[in-house]
Length: 266
Image 1 (cartoon, helix red, strand yellow):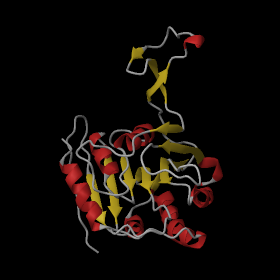
Image 2 (spheres, rainbow, N blue to C red):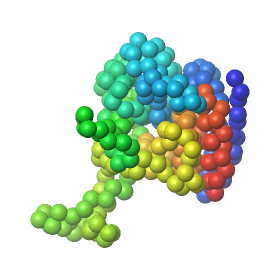
Image 3 (spheres, rainbow, N blue to C red):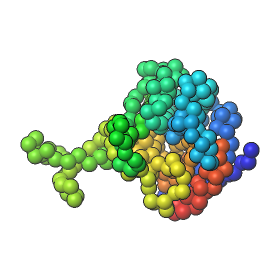
Image 4 (cartoon, rainbow, N blue to C red):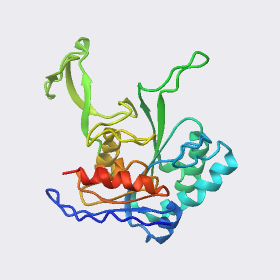
């Protein structure tokens, strides 16, 4: 299997960071990593559609197949994650119930933090059922002593009936008057990002979505891993935010796209 390295000592403003990406099966990479070496894991995993996307074959929505694929990988992710670390797994509604059971088994029910709902407006519509317009992100920590800081970046629009808080700063945009509050576990973002060009990859996720998780669950200089790299959005965000990054994808085309996107980051 071909290995492609993106070893870039990065400059950025306040610390030296590195980016490493490989075209390799994620279990192979995980088995090579030392214990407690990663601060944060974010993975936009295989959704269990059973579809052939051309560049890769998705898993079938069969419980035995889902468990056979994910259980050994999640056990290794638990091993490499630091005691203060967290993991975010993104999927849709086909397999989230099975993944929740597996995650409870591996990470522990008491370390479940959130089921995050990301809504989007793009895609088709259905006459026979409600149109499916959201993904689920399962957020677990490894222990109760985990790093988390919810940034006050969420626009909260003013309900004038409730009055104003003199301790808060208020601003205006095209919608109305707002203040900045904490993020909740449910939000809507566009389904793609055009920063550094629109990406020719079927399952590309928006930069602002992954930025939210990386800002909340890691600090500058921390190590973030993505074992289902896809279009490389996690790597791009880590380079911008001064995080070290380790990632892989079994599809060499994904690594080529990631390289091109990283080259575009100033």
